[in-house]
Every structure is written in C-alpha cells, then in structure tokens.
Image (cartoon, rainbow, N blue to C red; front, top):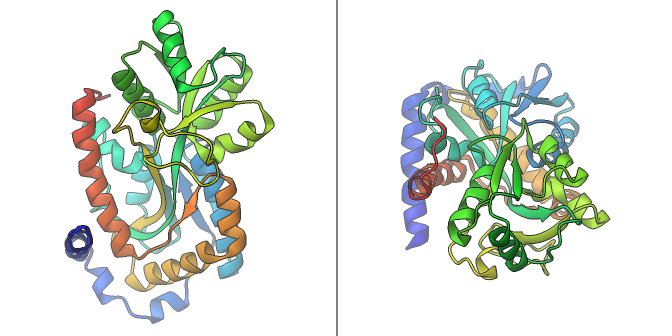
Length: 332
C-alpha cells in the first residue's frame, strides 16, 4: 500500500515537472554529450563547516573525477538555505548551476511562507537523492549531563538559562530545538547563528551549551571528545552511532527530524542532462569508499531516480507544513 502510494505520488510529480518545463520533454540524448562545458557550481545554502557543506564537498570531488570538469561548492548562506535555493531556481537551466540541499529545503515553505519566492518542487528539476542523515543532539562536555533525561532535568531546574544554537531562525537545527521544548516541556533559549559551522564552534568553545546539528559536522568532534552526544533526532538509530539512542526512545515518542541530502537543478533543465547527472551520482554513491566515507559522517547513501526524489519532496513539504502548524512556529 505504501509502495503504491509512493508510485502514485511519483507519477503526479512527473506530470508537474513536465507541465512546468516543456524543455525536459524535448531534450535529446545529444544535449548531454556536450555537458558540462565549463565549471559546475554546486550551491550550498549554509556556511562552510556545517553538515550540508561537508557532505557536498565529498560529492563535488567525485563529480569532478567522473566528468573531468570542475564541480565546485559555493557557499551561499542566508535564511536557512533560501538564498541559495532562490539563486538556483533563477539560474540558466543548463546544468552548470546546481543545488545541494538538505531538510531545510522542504521545511522552508512552512517556516517562511512570506519570504519564499520560489516553489521547492515546481521550480526545480530533481536530480538524485544522495544520502539520509540525522540531527545529533550534542552538548559541551562541561555541561553536567550524560543523557537526554539528565539534560531535561537540568533544563527544568534552570528554566531560561540553557541556550541552544542553530544555523538560523527557522532551520532544521532550530526546529529540532523547538520540538524538544514542546515534547519535554522545557524552557531553553534559541540563539541563531549564520550557519551550522559557527554555531557548532561556539558549542565546542563553551559559549553555548547545546545544539542539534547534522551528523557530518559533529561526528569528528564527538570522536575527539570535544562534544558529548546525547541522542539522534531521526526515528531510528544511526548505523555509525549504534549505541546512541533516538530522542523518541529516550522518552519522547513521535520525535523525528531526519534529513535527506540531494541534488537539484533549475526547472526546465534538459532531461538528458538531468539523467546523465543522475547516472553518475548513482555510480558515485554505490562506490565503497564513498559509502564508507559518508557512513563515517553518520549518513546512509541512498541514490534513486529523479522521480523518486520529486515524490519524496512533495510528501515532505506537506509533512512539515502540518508539523510546524502543530508546534506553532513560523518566522515570517
């Protein structure tokens, strides 16, 4: 039943994509033979050092090797990925400007309904899923807690005195903190930064007590002991951190903030180019060294077709609209 529903959604996505950009249906295989003809710029909507940036650089390096042309990461932080996504939505649809996105892309319609000048599905050509991941709930080791239960108890004993950092108002890091406040009934204070990297640095430095951040950014610091991990935000435990419980199993059922890392192109990008990119990315995520490298960052490679990615994004947009309404969080 779930499979049938997904296939129906995928079919709808295909119709939407075809209706939005007829160039996809007119593309010929010859279009892809000339691609890429110059440097391809992979847009990341967050500062360097964050979870999205770290994994994007792994993929960009492999794409460069696959195509024999440079694929470079351009960090374009602002409004939790909106600045970068807007830039890609308005770019020339020839495959030389791409977006590397995470959960924020499908969250933004619910969190920023007034400032969003593009549609997260219709204004993009889905290329490929890359990996799934999770937010890690980490604290500075000086904070006297070793479990989520102890953190909640401390927060209740010190209402309004424990701060949590995020990459900016309305992003996945912020939403994770707000959901924890709702589920646990605690008063912790949100401190927004201009990216996950700067937020994480201040947690490591002790200026901020805690944060939820993507596993690729936190894993090296967890291993080195500069951060203490209390839980992961996804519905299931992460293979790279099998001993770390989920927030849900730590006493808050229903808590689930996962992340999908994926590549998008502007709408109307020729299907031949999209399909060639998808084919190369499928080979990349199937490589043992890439699986192991991303696994070490707390990610699970997934791959998939453009249609599957489009279907996922359509469902995810609606999921976050309902959840944000429940939380009562909206930034503009």
